[in-house]
Image 1 (tube, rainbow, N blue to C red):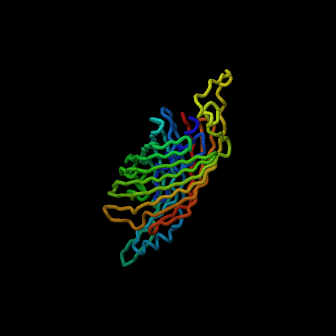
Image 2: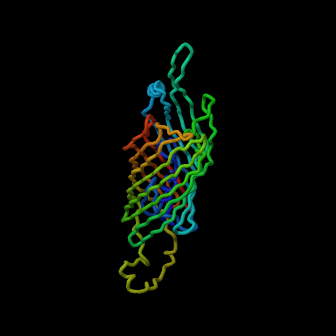
Image 3: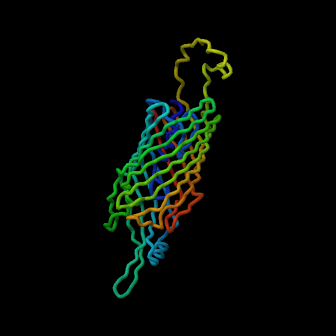
Length: 359
């Protein structure tokens, strides 16, 4: 199972919620270099599994109290958020060599939620202020993801897979703010909706390099407070390079490929010492990714919120270190596209870290 724990990370990461829509993200490790957020086409071998613990910190900016007050004076319902912090437990299992299932259980904390407040007071006085609604935290929605690898060409080291799954309405939807009022649906830890996922992943390896890409569409259902948080389309691409610990793919019986074309491989006498397993080796991967997401408008009772949805693209350098069955990574995402609809907080940066164990 020397090559599987790493590529698992992408599946954990991408079954997360959107980076810019105030919902969280995820994790992996193999014998080859591989991505972090991007989903690799590689699957776990049959009967093998992995567990991972992920932490995500997403910082927002660009919308201060003065902006909220100005918006309120124009009867624009705008809000801002400080950070989204998410801690998740994830697991995956190889049903067959080409079919893997994953599950992710998140805990979510949204901080410093504020919104503009427009009020008409006695005497004709108009008041535009900011309501400090506080933080919202709790367990989020569980996501299930299946991955079927339909192409695995070992000669060219090319792989491709279908992705499919669902996000279940298991998260908290009744959190109350500092004013004693129910948080809006988008600030609840859970959405209350059943969402469906469908996509594809592609991997091409060459030497110590790996090139990966994937797309994933999320069809969002109607959830708590009669709100539909908006369909999503995620796209990712990554280039990875093994800095330390690269080993070329093994040839059968240590013979060159040309020798295999001339009949059966001759019997080779094994020395007893050859059966002693080699000690675990350290590996270090450098990764550079583009992580993009388009998010449709949010609607409540059929009414579209003009201050919702948009398009964000992050440039995310990262590093993974692994030894044996254990691996850990960290990545730092910086927005290079931050095109939000209407008046919203914008992504400032995203930090993602993880520790994983394969068995």
